[in-house]
Image (cartoon, rainbow, N blue to C red; front, side, top):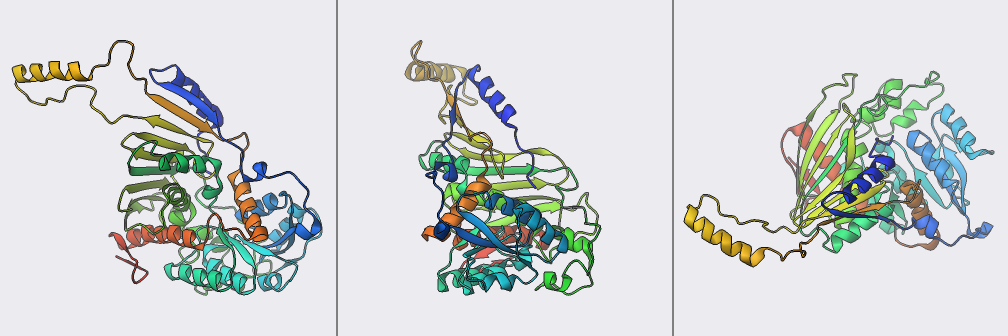
Length: 454
């Protein structure tokens, strides 16, 4: 589910409008993504990456459809616990496909090189660890973990079995975020002191109130297996279809939406550890449908050298994006999950007039004259402040690039663009947001004990 961000038409209109203002503005097209920049050549059968997919739900169906269109990539099998989605997997692939309810069947097949695992969050750790032990590289959806301790189990399994693990928050593969990272590293906006990120939705599907298939039943869904490590309970189609609404299976807003904010921020800022502290305010204000997670959350994080403020609501449609605020300007990313571009607006951080608060008139006038003599530019030499807009190629899809990067890692054994260490740091930040909310006090990361303390 992609929240509506700023439209390309509106982004370009904003770009054009700025050019006629007092500021100078220019627009720059970003280069092609990882796939489009790769040499165009057909892959030999011996060079084809064959994957299996575990879970063909809302996200899984999209990942499957995108993956099979990548050159040199082939789906060799799927595991799915709902009969309807087993049918969907075959429809997407468009040819006979082996589909099983036992994901272990895929891990036992020597002709499968790697696994895509877009399962509910409470299954992530077990699937990743099992894949590593079976010698399969794995692309696991975000957030990487459902509980803090699971991340360190994943890290150990990946290292012990020398496997590639890539987490499915696509920001580290995006040409937009790559440009933001480059600009920040160059000091384009100076010292970053505050980062703001926002997202807002206002529809049933965006609030995870997904329509339940009419044939959902214990006969068509392997409920007991789906529960996995979650508390045992009788079959419940609502919990199965709308699992993001329940703490037993997901992390609510932090796990579904904050994670995109956090991944983008960690990537752009080069973060290599969880935040120090987090404090969350919010509530369940609208969706009184049995869920046990809030529908509106604001979390403030302390990263030591700067602060981060994240705000997500499921109750109002708002523009989505990031604002990196520095002492020499603002860098704004338009959109979150697949942004169309970014704008950088420069500031010099200097006084543009004398600063003489509450001075007596003779003293102020004397200071003002001297200040203007020393600081006023000569006529015709005034500095024009500039803003620059960077925009992605038309129809650019960073999820496609993210999957391409994963399959390249599998084939060439090159490092993952979003490995288990990165995924663990971002997931811990999600858990800190929830811990603060549910305990109603700040959550502090204790690196020595690898625990969140409240």
